[in-house]
Every structure is written in structure tokens, then in C-alpha cells.
Image (cartoon, rainbow, N blue to C red; front, side, top):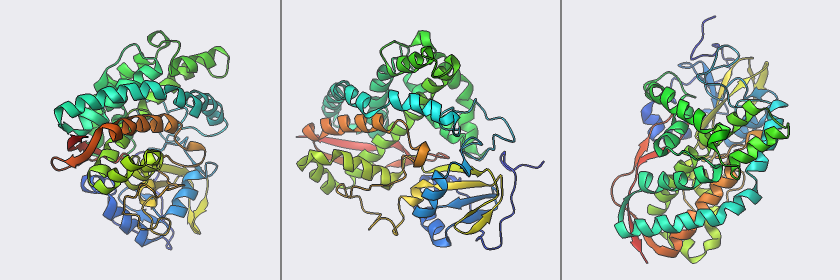
Length: 407
């Protein structure tokens, strides 16, 4: 069988528009907003011949397709590769790349470990670290928003929350980037990431072993579930690995994107300082506007339809979550950053049974950091050009020069 990027080529129905484009072009990944707008303009669904895959980007059809776990499955891979036809580069995630009933069992364990109650319990620890970091940043004045803030904060608090006894900050940040880049085609971006995969993945796997974790962290909770027979011991290590693949890189991205938003919208920073209760909706608006995870794929597990158009079994569908979050049919003035918007229903954390299991922890980290900043930082100003880092699934900054002005 001839495959295209690990999945079976499909023939689109003549009713589906054909778009000769490449969503994984570095220029598109660095600035996806024009591409998203054209995707929505072209219809409910398009066929992209370069990758023999479909794409959806309007809000309603994207949410419906992404959430329909019985038809559009995750167990065949959430990237271009179809796991039914070939082996992935690493064992599939038993939380992200699995369907019910297996997903239900592992999700229950992860949801308990990452519950709102657990996240709230970590809040004091997160805030103390945020206070220390912000004080140090203000002494410097000019900072690099990605490395000095967005990366520095999560790797200072999350490994401790997990209970890791061995911390390699660079590997923790880079592992998520490797995992998400692997979801795309065999382009230069993916190849560059895969060059580091053996070294980084080996360290991550070793760091997730039980003897490398304390008993009182999130990892210890997962292994305790294995002791109770809820999951297997080997599954416990894989779930801890999931903390590190999705719990660091996407939070780093969210923090960097939040700083970018506020540095370019000083009126919104003033509004947040005036009303700290807007921290939570402000973060939701950051997520809607910048979509840290811009695309996930689903695979049609049987012949079906999307928006009335026939789709054959085995078809890959790119769900452009970032595009859906900018759909003017859903959001009023979607290009504006408004912290009082309260964008309920955004797809930045996914939807349905595969909504991001770590979102409570991510919110707790952002609330701690923004809480520390609004008490100490009068203004956040650009100190140079922001540079976005092309990634096959994540919309992240590479550099963000900032000037922090103390109160």
C-alpha cells in the first residue's frame, strides 16, 4: 500500500473544495492567521492534496469533528501518521492517543491527580516561586520573555509538583516541542526535532521511573493508583510521561503568549491591574487568541460525513483549533484582545473527552505568575521584535524581548 506521511491517500468527493496549500509551511506556522482566515473562507471542509488530508477550521464543524470520538478517533494518531498502518516513533500516549474504554480508565486516574482541588493545593507553592522570579526579573529590567519567564517559571515549579528528583530544564522544555513537531509531516522542522528525540526521550523515560519520584507528588499519586490496581505499573510510567509531554511545553507557550498579548495591549494590562479578578478570563482570552496548540488530527474510523460531505474510512482530518478560535461567526471582533470577553467554549484546550487533562495546573501556574506581576509590574513593554517559532502543532514564541517597568 502506498502511504502519504504514514496514512492512506484518499479521494475527495467532488463536492469538497480542493486547496493547493501546505499548512506545515514554516511561513504559515510562524504566522497562521491569514491561512486560518482563508481556510474558513473556503468552506466547512477542504481537501489538501499535498498531504492527501482534509482540514476544517470553522468553529462549529471543528468542534463537532474534534469531539466525535466514536467516529473520528485518536487511537490512530493525532498527527498525520495512522497508527493502524505503521508504528509511531514512541509508544502511543495512553491518555491522548487512545479511545474509550481504555481512555476512560486512564483518564480517571489522570483527572484525579490533576483535579481543581489538587491545583488549588499547589497554588501557594506556585505563587511563592512567582514572587521570587518576578522580583529577580524587575532587578534586570530588560528580559527575554521566552527563556527568562515563559520557560523559567514552569520548569521551576512543575517538576517539583510532579515529585521529580532529577531535573534537566532543557530536556523538559524540548521534549514537548519534539512530541508536537512529530505530529506533522517529515519536513525539516520534524527532522530537526527528531534528531534530539533519542537523547531527550531516554532522559524523560528514566525520569518517570518510580524510584526517581517522591511519594508526595503528582507522579506518586499515579503510581499509588497502580498499587490499587486501577492501572498497570507500566501504564503509570507512561502517564507520568504524559505530564512532561503536555504539562510543560504548552504551559511555556501559554505564558509566553500571555506576555506577548499584554505587551502589545497596554490598556488591557491596566485593566487587569485595576481588577485582578480578571486574571482567569484574561488567560482564557490569551488561549483563544493565540491557541498554543493550533492543530490536532483525527482519523475517520469508518465511512462518514463532515458537514454533509462524504468522508471515507482512514481519512485524516486536520482540526485547526486556532482557526476555530478566530471564527467571526462565533466570536465578536475575534482579532481584538479583550480580557473581559470570557470566551467560554474556546478550543485551545480541546473539547469533549480529549479536553486537556492538565488545564487546571496550567491555569494555576498562570494565575500565580500574573498575580505576582500585577502587584509589582507597572508596564510590560516590547524591547524588540517578537519572533514566532514554527512548530507542526504548537503556536509558540521563539524570542520575546521585553522591558518590565516596576511600580
